[in-house]
Length: 271
Image 1: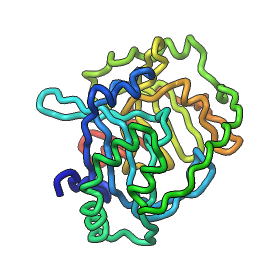
Image 2: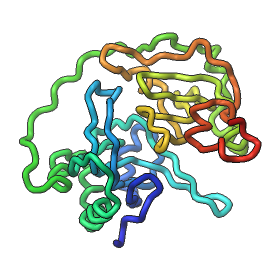
Image 3: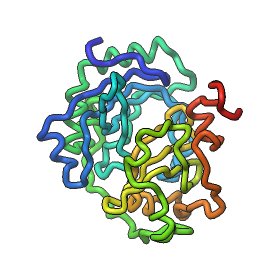
Image 4: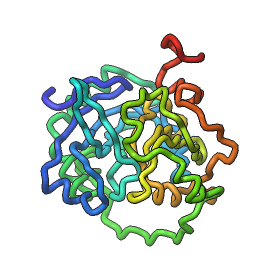
């Protein structure tokens, strides 16, 4: 395979660099992106707390805009949460499968290896019908107008005050602090998803922290996420909420983060 490489989470991963013209599609939202991360993966499925629906178990192709940066010989990756385009941070199902099969995953990665560029172009152009056709075959669903979104109040339960937000360290100010020593100042939650806040940029209204979506500890990551977009999320009629009883403490003392980062297997971290 020329594009896909074996990943760590039952997946094959390809990084497609973004050109300057590609980046212009996101520039208006202030997102400094470098690549599209395209994965052929196996999903265990389960409840989707954002849509209220149910994700099927099986093989799928997912696409996420990311920023890759290299420093001191190490490459780090940050991702864009809650993309403003329909195909960002989303996926298209290839086939349902009750059990994971590594050979089948590799076969699918080989099948889509030559389609990485076409998939990337469909995402950049926001053409969901072409994307579905590329992945599922030559019979895409008929084009229908998108339904008008239901009006949503841009509020959340227990919304933090400006004073509380100002107490959070500025963005990048803890860059040299080891991840397990970064202090988590706020915790937001919705259904089975959690957002832990370590830094805040009041001008851009962006948080940096640790995100766990749908109880998926394996795919949980550190990265930036928008405060304003966070406030609009719903799980059915349930609004985003802030943990009013949160105790400010290092990430190494937050059980969910410790489990997701597998720090419990490292010396010096409480189990």
